[in-house]
Amino acid sequence: MAENSAAASPPAKKGKLKLIILLVVVIILAIALSVAGTLWFLGGGLPGMGDDTKAEASVAEETFSPSVYLAIEKALVTTVQGEGRQRYAQAYVALEADDPQALTAAQLHLPLIRSQLVMVLGNSSFTELQTPEGRQNLAATMLVTVNEVLKQEGEPAVSKVLFRNFVVQ
Image (tube, rainbow, N blue to C red):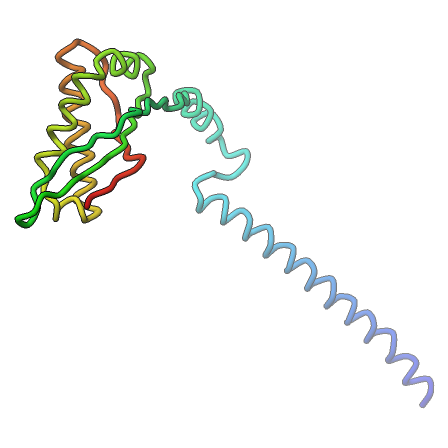
């Protein structure tokens, strides 16, 4: 009887060892497939699949040029159309451009630009300026106005008009 239990013991250890090795292999395979699937799903492609030349070409075509800004130091202050009362609007504005020459031109023509921006702000309604959408529309209108002035002067355009501070009361 003792011989039978001793003989049965080594095959059970070999079976457990095979099971552990099989589980480790399955786990490693699952991790590798998960990483490969994630890379493929995110569009990075799999390493060594030949997509490297396309990726390098697209990176070479895209050159990063940081934006430059011009802060208009004096506030734009004007009265706006209110509900039967005189209301005020004050805006501190900055201009953003990809081309520094556009901001140099804007600095040169700043009196004309400020005048046009005050007119745009003054033509806005008080209730419109109280909403985020109204302020976004005002910024878009101001951008068109600034670019029209620069276009008349034969200068490059700016890309955004940014509010640094905005108050209506």
